[in-house]
Length: 225
Image (cartoon, rainbow, N blue to C red; front, side):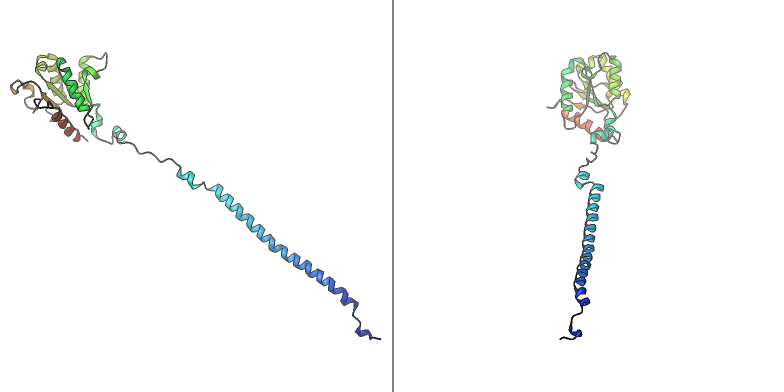
């Protein structure tokens, strides 16, 4: 018969399963907090990315903004920051007799078609319909930087042409380059005495002096500021 000391203690048998179950619950509880921080950390990171995307527009939108277009040279000139050439409506006012209208038209066509694109006033083309003839002439002379006098035999015979010549001289007396006489079909002896203090352009050449007139006007316009 075995001694009482050799029998297992019933209390010790009951403690082992309970201890195992307690350890299992303890491990389970310890594992749950490990997962929760991971989930809680991922959510704020996603939210921060969403808020950062909403608060800052995409780079493509900011780059799509249309830049301010710089003003053109013509606009700068009209605003007063460019050449003084644009301070008047015309570069040249062409004075001629009625019988020399065809020659005047050829001169204007040459000047306007040049690379400088000179702006010309031709009375029968550019005068305001219904306007007074004298007023229109005086306005054209004052609105032009230069005056070209197409002096021909018909010019000398026409009292109206003499009036144009005197008005041109009054508008810019003794101004070099402002009044340009173009002598055509006349000798030097027939040159008007009112213009003797001015050099004239001889229209006997192949281009009838058109090129020299253009060069004289272009040089004068370059002096404007």
